[in-house]
Amino acid sequence: MFRTRNGASAREDRPLIHLVDVVKAYETPVGRFIALDGVSLDIEPGEFVSVVGKSGSGKSTLINMVTGIDRPSSGEVWVDGTPIHTLKEGPMAVWRGKNVGVIFQFFQLLPMLSVVENVMLPMDFGNVYKPGDRQDKAMELLGLVEMEGEANKLPSEISGGQQQRVAIARAMANDPPVLVADEPTGNLDSRTAETIFQLFHSLVAQGKTILMVTHDNDLAQRVTRTVTIADGKIVDEMRHPDYYVEEALEEALQYGA
Image (tube, rainbow, N blue to C red; front, side, top):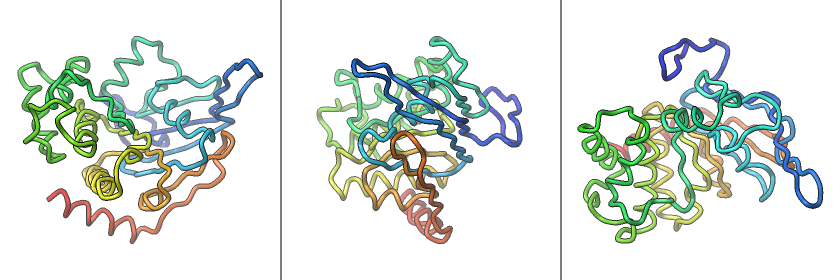
């Protein structure tokens, strides 16, 4: 049995991420648009799952359901034992700050804050750590992504790959069980993208669960499982051979050593 962040026991048969018949519909000037059409998906703790599909297929809408950024028109969304489809805006913001770390394609760092201040910012809202401990924790996270030496620089003073590393550290600021990444390597060159991907594998090896949207077919195969979406429906799920995943994790552990 796994436990939720508040220590309450969750149902033994419910995975870490549990979507049931999720429908998301939008009203547009030309009529009703169905972004998700009866999607059900389970993700277990410690999985690294990629979501692939053409533009407009529903990938980003799916991860917005998991993060609580958007809400289903119908269906259920459970994350770490919490039915987030029932939460109102205030409780949702508090829940999200402690339970899900979001990594964006364009980093979304605040330009007037230093690197370490960007990492500390979610801590100020999450109240997971005491104020006096937050800078030390932020430096620890920057060390994990090999950015502690740039802690006092502004985002404009570091490269795109370095900014993405900082964004990953920020996503982990409150030690969430789930990391959700929306095209995290889409704005990076191939060499930097590979470095970021190895970092993701090292985080999975340390117990994080990652849900990642990507257009990179190579990266999409180097995970625990690939989910393909088309026209708002899951049309394929492929679990990759254990030996391949274990090999990737071994490389990631060497990278993080």
